[in-house]
Structure formats: C-alpha cells, structure tokens
Image 1 (cartoon, one colour):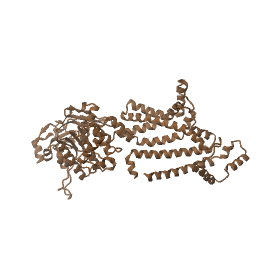
Image 2 (tube, rainbow over the protein chains, first blue to last red):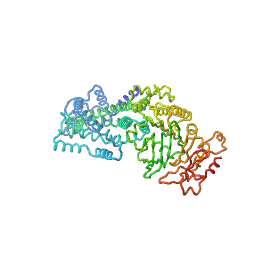
Image 3 (cartoon, each protein chain N blue to C red):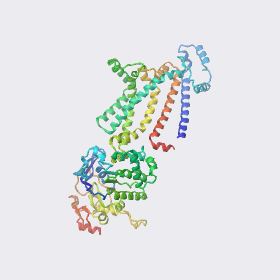
Image 4 (cartoon, chains in turn orange, yellow):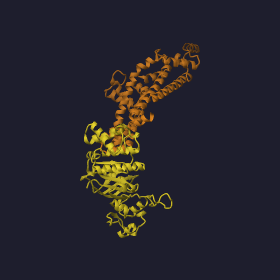
Length: 307
Length: 329
C-alpha cells in the first residue's frame, strides 16, 4: 500500500510540473504579459519599462525557474489588477466554490443513486423512462439556460429563493440545483447500467436462491458492486466542480473560484489564471488518488492485486 | 412426496421468438432420495431446476398443473414467502463456483447472512454455525477462510463454500445444477462425496442436474433422461444405465468413452449426429425424431406413448418393447 502511495505521489508531482510548464509557456509566449499589465493603449516605452520592472526581459527558462521557486515557498505571485497576493484571493473564494461543489455533488448522487437503481430494478417501466428522460434532459439543457430558468421561476415569479450572492445557505440552493443537474446524467446512466449488469450476475442469483431478502439483495449485495465505477466518475466530476464552475458562479454572482477565473481571463490577469489552473490540476490528482483508495477499500480484488 | 411436478412448461423469449425450453415435465422426489436429471446442453434441464426455485430469467414464462414442495404450491407463493422458503427448506448449488459468490463480501459475511436471515440468531452464533458447516464439507482452516474474499479461493474451495451456504439451514431439498462441471476430476470426486454424505446424513431430497453419466452412476437413485424439453426415459439407476430403452439414452450411454476402448485408436468414440433442436411451436411428436436411428413412419405422425419396460423404467417411444429389449441385448 505504501509503495502504491509513493508511486502515485511521484506521478502526481510529474503531472503537476508538466501542467505548470505548459501553463507558464502558453501564457508567456502566446501572449505578452506586459500588455496585460500596462493595458492596450500603452506606448512602447511604457512596455519596455514594465518588462524591465517585472523582469519580463529575462529568458523564459530563468523566469520559469523563479516562478517555480516562488510557488515552492507558497508565493503564487501578485495579481496585476488588484495587486494582492494570488494565493489570498483564491483561498478566500475557495469555501464558496467548495460548498457549491459538495452540495451539487450530494444532490446529484442523492437523486442518481436511487433513481438509477430503481430504473435497473424495473427496466422499461415508467420509472426507467423517467430516469432516462431526466438523464437526457440534464445533459441536453445547457446550465446557463437552466440557471436562468430557475432564477425566473423561483427568484422572480415565486420569490422563494435569492438569486445572487453567497451570504446564506439559501443562496446556494439554485446554483446547486443547476450544477447538480449538470453532473447527474452520467451518474444515472452509470448506476443504471451497472445495476442491470450486477442484478443479472450469478452471485445475485445465489443470494436469491439462499433466500436473502430482496431489499438486502438490492441495496447491499448489488449496490456495493454497482457503485464501484461510480466512485471514480464522482471524483472526476467533483474535481471539475471544485475548480469552480465558471458559468454557474457567474450567473448567480457567487464569488467563488470560477467567478474569479472568469474575471481574470476577461482582464488577462495571468498570475491568477496560472494559479487557478495549477489548483484545478492538483485537486484532480488528489481526488483521483482518493477515489482509487476508496475503490481499493470497497473492492477486495483491487487490494490484493496491488500487494 | 417431497417434490411433485406435473406438466411443467417453461417458455423463453429468444430474439422475439418464443422458445419452448421445457415442454411438459413430470418429476417426483422423495425425502432422502437422489434424482439425476441427465441430458445434453440446451435440453432444458437447467431451466427445469430454475423453474423449481422460481428463479427463471426475466421474460421467461412458467406454467404447470402442479409444482408442489411438501404440499406447498410453489408457483402461487408470494415473493416474500418464497424468499423465506429458499435457503431454509430448499437450497440450490450452481454450476459456476467462480462467479456464484459475491466478490465484495467475505465468505463469512455471506455465510452468516444466510443463517441469520432464516434463524434470526446473533452474529456470533451464525459464525459458529458457519465454521461448523464449512468443516463438515471438508474445508480446513475454516476460521481463516471466513475472513477471506472469494477471489482468494480456488474453484473447488468456492464450490465447497457454496455447498456449505446451501446446507447452512439444513434444507429438506437441495437442487444441484451441474455443481462439478467446472471443476477438475479430483475435485469433482471430492465434491460429489461431500454432497452425497451431506445428503444421507440429513435425509435430504437431492435433485441433481448433470450431463455426465459417470456422475449419474456414482450418486443417482433414480434417473430422468431429458431431451429437448421432455423427459424421454425415467427409472432406477440400474434400469436406465444397464438396460436403456429409449434410442436417445442408448446413444448417450454409447458416447461415454470407456477405458478399455481408449488409447489404441482402434475404435471411434460413438456420437449422436446433429444437435438438440429448438422448439418454437407445440409439437407432441417425439423430440428425438430428427436424430433417431430407429425412426419409423409412425414417429412422424403420432406422439409416443409412455410405457413401462420389464426392467421397470418408463419410456416414451413407439418402438415395440420387445424390440427395445432386443436392442439392449
């Protein structure tokens, strides 16, 4: 187990270094950071002065080395716009994004698990059709549109829920529904397909032949096998959401990482963008690792394969 | 009679067509008796077993004029009552030990669950009972095995675990669907011995499905030969194996390799040409019609009558009984 962890940690570092190189090179070669700082109307003299002040006239490799060195000390640079440390800006927005991501994921799983299972237990019935309709609709409706519809219905017409800001939990209801609906369809499909396969398996037939109660067969014997692939998918989806949903946070003016990413991109605030990209890849790597560990915990076959 | 089955029919859906897998089977099984249902792949013997357990696959239709276990009509039982009966009074062992155990629960979890479901005892009592039964089926290190997962055991060990699971609640009847087919010869012999011992110790009725006449010779009291969804011959082990009456049974017995013929290459192993036909429509005529070497014109017109031979078995065939005797000689 320890060697597995070490291997995965090494791989994580390699991936992170690669991401940082690609991100740094793209944002310095494909685009001139001096223009970003000075603005489009800056004269050539202004730009030269800025390049000198920020050290942008030095070779790329030197600047990358300095960038990585700073990151190692927890210094992700300073925002061109706000002149504040990038790390502070991200850290203060992270709770909003994390709350949104966890609520959305919880909502998606809370609906997908029972609905997908029910669809598998009674295929080609009204429940199955409903699950499939929900899966198709959730995937087909863009979340900016779903978000706007929810705002119109619950915020403007019924006036039940606030439509922007992040002051209370109520502010998170509509964004979570929007983002959760977006994450749900592949989960419903995966659970339905997994349960159909597992319910037709030999070991479920054995359990039936031994008189195990139907409820226990479905929710203990079958579900534990069917959710194994769901763990991995959920980790990827949660990673995606923890990186901040740019669209959903913008619609509901939630001051999270996604909203920050959108602001930084529209104003070319490179240090912030770079830091967010690194953060997202770090979250992905950590969650994938956690999902693997959770899978190994749940599936004994994986555990012994790794020994 | 422990088990009484009359006119059992199972129809499957096969790519939009109705496939008649079991076409009117009658079976009787007494307590303490072993009945072997023998036939080649696709003859409907597994479907018969699953029908008795009410475990037919989705889309299968079952009909029967009688499907009684100890006087209880199984086809009329509610899902709840059926589940209380299975594993408690009727158990089943399947062909594939490799896939028949749940991969994510330990052997102990799965054995205890069965016992606790039917007796409601504590986990500790179930643990003790599981170890006792595992040891009775010849498993060493039972306590260690309880903590292991199915993938850590060999096929033979898994089949013993499945037998133990089926015996947990001391059922009155056990249905074995080719439990030794997937195992090597040595393990097969051990498993048969364990099953036979368990059966005689507990006076269980055993319905044993197999295609292997060697297994039949070893464990059967009575034999029912099944072909294309029907039982074509039925009688005591001695009668059916020593003086088979139906041309199909004869062909089946002739196709068993004998050590005295083997190795020299002098004699070709006998086989029955063709395959088991699939029946999509009702056809009362003899199911063996298309492959029978003794076919007569009456066979293509009329259903064969069921008659009793001198040796005592029942056979469904048009051939005159004396002609059948002559064939045997």
